[in-house]
Length: 234
Image 1 (cartoon, rainbow, N blue to C red):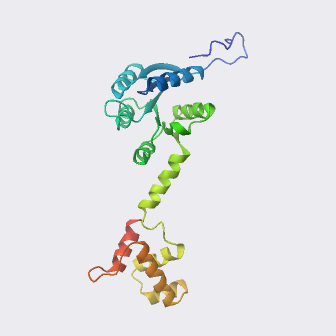
Image 2 (tube, rainbow, N blue to C red; image 1 turned 180 degrees about the vertical axis):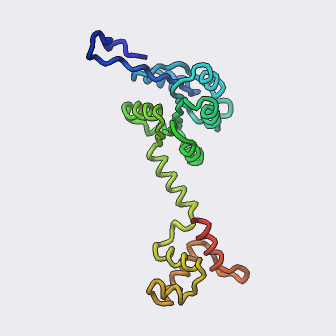
Image 3 (cartoon, rainbow, N blue to C red; image 1 turned 90 degrees about the horizontal axis):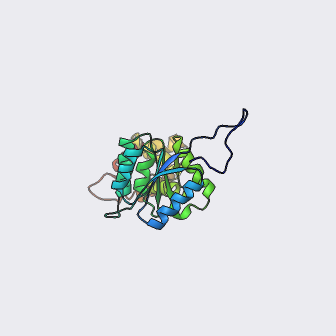
């Protein structure tokens, strides 16, 4: 909605007011929903619908084809992944509608899925939205096809990746030793290649085995398992 307090362009040289971005707000908390809708209206957006659950949201998106949908993750009836399912449906049924997920909860799995689905998407934590101008800018960026993710979510995604990556805790030298092990080199061959003593190679290998949680057993060849781990991560 164009701000009615701004004078309309009456003569040449004045800019023509831009069409307001059309937004639907999906949030089961009525006070939060109405407050957000009021904020968006005051910030120059046109709120074309308010939804309390995913079913209402999808009906409004189908009917109105808004530029943006601001969606909570947890909505009725189960308050679990309704917002996630709705975001998926919107991306499939109305790909021209950008989606900003506003959540009180950090769900790294969903955040990772969301940001990998292409353009015009965002994930912000309610508790970290502290500046209205930044929030409005995020919505405008999403409407232009950008992907906007809360820095706290990004940090958690990086940490989660590190936790899943068995090689992340290895030092640079240990990774070099492991790479040469994967090539089938002996301790002597590794030492010659890296210009270190064989005893130093053995020390690095022991550290690699410990960090990769490969205990010394009678049945498993730890060098092979370590090499497989290295190759699988490439």
